Structures are given as C-alpha cells and as structure tokens.
Amino acid sequence: MALRRVLGLGAALGRRSCCSKPPLSPDFVESLRAVVGDPNISTATSVREQHGHDESMHTCAPPDAVVWPQSVGQVQELAALCYRCRVPMVPFGTGTGLEGGVNAVQGGVCFDLSRMDAITELSLEDFSVAVEPGVTRKALNRHLHGTGLWFPVDPGADASLCGMAATGASGTNAVRYGTMRPNVLNLRVVLPDGRLLHTAGPGRQPRKRAAGYDLTSLFVGSEGTLGFLTQATLRLHPLPEAAAVTIASFPSVRAAVACTVQVLQAAVPVARIEFLDEVMVDACSRYSKMELPVAATLLLELHGSRNGLAEQQQQAEEIMRLNGGSGLAWAEEPEERGRLWAMRHNAWYAALALRPGCQGYSTDVCVPISRLPDVVVETKQDLQDSGLTGPMVGHVGDGNFHCILIFNTQDPGETQRVHAFTQRLGRRALAAGGTCTGEHGVGLGKRALLLEELGQEGLDTLRSIKAALDPHNLMNPGKVL
Image 1 (cartoon, rainbow, N blue to C red):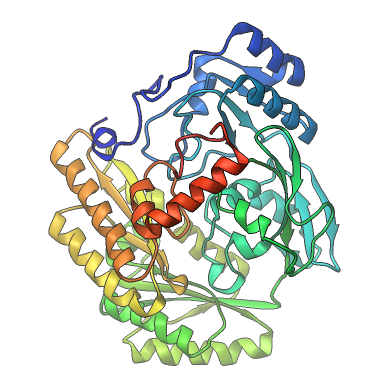
Image 2 (image 1 turned 180 degrees about the horizontal axis):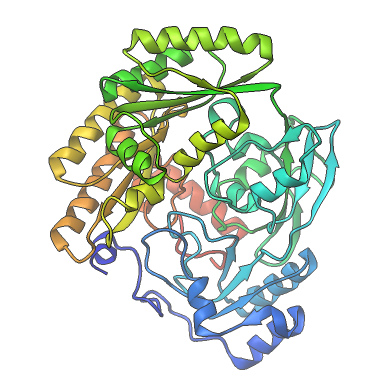
C-alpha cells in the first residue's frame, strides 16, 4: 500500500476515499435489473472488486454494481437511467489498461461491455470492418483469417478494440501502420444521457473527411470520460506478401537507439523496430529460454514483396553494422518470427521474474525521434543512479519507450525512489518536446503531468469539452482531468 499512498493512486481496497455519493438504492438496482435481466447484473463484492482495477498499481476502487448490457439499446437505457439519477458510469472492456482507467473512484455502475461482441460490416473492397466492444484484436484477426486483410495495431495484450480506441492504444506495428487514431474511421457512441452519436455520421467509413470538427478523433483517447464506445469502424490493411525479422546486439544503449534514428532517416520501410536494454534482454532471454547476448538490442521487422524485401534487408543491415550491430540473422518463417515476438510480448512477465515477490509499475513517455538517443541514455543513467530495477523496452520507431519498475512495495524508501523517478521521466520527456504518455493514457496517474504538458489553457479547454458533453461529470469521473 505504500506505493499507492506515495503516488496518490487512490483509496484502500474495497472502498474509495473520494466517494461523495451514498450506495445505490435497492430501487435503482432493480431498475438496472429490469433493463438487462437478472443474469446480467451483480452487486457481489468479488465481482465489483474484479471490475475495480486494471493491470496497473492503482488501488482497487470497486463500483457499486456491474451490468453486462447485450445491445446498444440497453446501453442507452442504462445510461439514461444513471443520468437521471446522477449515478457515475464507468466503461469496462478487458481490464488490461495500465493507468487505472477503469477504477470506480466515485463508485456508481460499471458497464462491462464484453458481451457485445458482434463483428459486422466487413468490406474487403473498402478495407473496413465494424466491431462491438467485446471484440478483441486477436478475435478480429481470427475472423479475418483467409481474407488477405488484418488489423495491425498490437499493444501486446489481447485488449478490446473499442478499449484500445478509448485509450488511444499503440504498439509494435505503429511505426508503419499507425496508432489507433488513424485506424478508426467512425465510432458509435452512447453519450452520458443515453443519446446515440455516430462520430462520422451513421454508416459512413470514408478514408478521409473534412466535414466539420473531427469528432472521431475527439473520442479516440478520451478514456471513457465522454461516452461509451459501443462500435468502432476500423481501417484494415493488406497482409504483406513477405516478412522478415532480425535481432541485433549493440555495444551501447546510445548505439542501438541512434541506429533506429538512422534507419528511419534512410526511409527503410520498417514495420516494427523495438528496443530492449541489456537488463530487459537478459530477463527475456531467461524467461523465454532463448540464448541472447546480454546487450542493448534491436528487434526489427520488415514487410513487403519478396523481391523488395531483400533490398530492404541489405539496407537495414548496412546501417546496423555501421552502428556496431552484430548477430544479424533473418527469420522469415512465421513460427520463427512468432517466437521472437512472443519473447518481446512477454517482457512484463520476464521483468517481474527478476525479483520474485515484488511488484511491477510500468510507465511510458514519447519524445521526438531526434531527441530519443539523449533521453534514453539519460533515463538509463537515472535508473542506475536511483538504484532501481527498471528494464527498458520501447517502440523506438515512434520515439516511445517504457520503463518497467520492479520494486518492493513494503520498502518506503524504494517506493519513494520509484515515485521520484517517474516524475523525472515525465518531465524529461516534456523538456525534450515530447509527451508524458505515448500510449498508456493519463488515467489516474498522470493528471499532474498533463497540466504541465498542455498548460492551464489547454486543460481548461479539455474541461470545457467535458462539461459540454458530460455536464454532471458522470462518465468515468476522476480520470484525465
């Protein structure tokens, strides 16, 4: 609990300190039950606690009730009911977030949208598909198997696609295919009072538009504070004809990150380029039972035609060797590539295994590519000077990297060092012209840094937008602002 007090991460398990509302009345709970039916509502303590936290270190803050709507109409009815009775509402997808975005810090009703799992409006010719919030990225790509198309945004976890839109998720493929923001064409949103909004107009999925304000982008990254995302129309991409991945070791962190910058400047069309420092490589190597040199490492993947791939490989190899890269061997078979990326995606568990019995706290920042080498090197030195276990990993093709801090929550001195380090990291990114969060979102943990990033005028503008759409502050209150 020490870390949570130091970081200001919420109340004690079981209740919330900031709740100013009384528990839900029996009559109100019965009204919810009348909408969704008895099997689709629960006030059991274990269920509420399960829905009161994500994968972050923020203290569990359970809702007063959990409902599982089956349709957009039920979401509208439930929202209208909560709006009339001034009851807070919290959307819940798969609970894989990292900034406390689902914690019900003011109680209320949690809307678990996982049972709305329809995949509709698939258009192979238009490269688009519509998904409800219960559809995860892996489920969508299984559905697309055999079509020649896929959805490439990959944050690692098998997250809900609407949840990924709500948090502005990113991942390993973003350097080529973009984050969620450019890959969402339309959203069907239930507003706090139950009204239905299609952000690009009903049934529309244009590849670009210049008609009025960009409402779709407004809701992407809104973290559930403006409305319920009950359907997302997504941009699909053709599967590449061929793919190849290599893993290269470098003499230093600076050499590995500088190589990334040069690869991008040379316009090598990389699909993924991931950085792991020597601590992370050692952890991943042991956890995934792979024999890798303990050194700063890049994991690079290319997509293209079979003929074009050879030229890209040669170009990438030349740049990596100029920066001291070694161990270059290309894997082209799906099984081999899958094994390498499974190692990368298991980085969180590999990091936890470094200190059994301790807990993890993951934080991320994003900086301009030109500043990336300096910021990564400074952060590495800061970790060492602070005496913290914090393996580094990042989607460095976007200037985005993560520190996974493994520490003893019962040690007040260590938890204080974690807090101080995360604040310095965020401010270091801001000083470099970057952002305090590249893909985890603001949630509960980075609200103070958001003020420093946007300034008071920016934050006041966000508050004005929030007040216009949610005048009673019922949608996921306490997050972002």
